[in-house]
Image: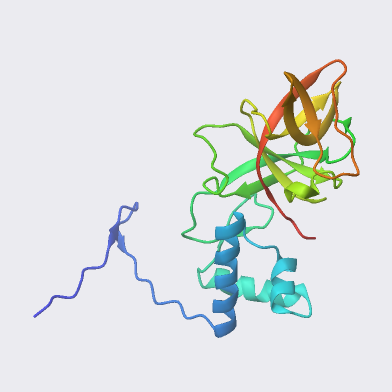
Length: 221
């Protein structure tokens, strides 16, 4: 005869037995949860409400909000304070919050911005980040890197590490910021666009590499 398993005890201030009933999700809630899990696994972030609305063909984001609230109430999603998208999977891999430092042109260089403009929550394992590596994000403005899959409005994730030949980098060129591919041509650094509409950039006075691109997140409005 088998004994019933004992409930787990948790070391709280007053020791209690945690009793948790099985969570029952509707068919639509299961579909949304699977979509959220897949998006998190492939892109490192939970989809926005607009992305969920478009994927399932809902008439408005209000329907999405109701489904997400129900999933949160049932414990399938949990609130993450300080995150732009708010909810995360309860058993997801560790989430890293990184600062968003304004915009960076994927086009001609322009004045650099250094003020933090919110945070981006990413899965560090998807971006192959090194231990204790300093990481930040920039919002792309322009289309000069579209050949590398980086589009206007994307959030690029940048790691503070030494650049290598053909790395995509965030650079200060003569005091102005730009996102380009670093190419070493006969010992000289050249910043190459990934769009034939734009010309390569060669620094006349100073070239400072501020970060190496390790990936990006596509954020839909």
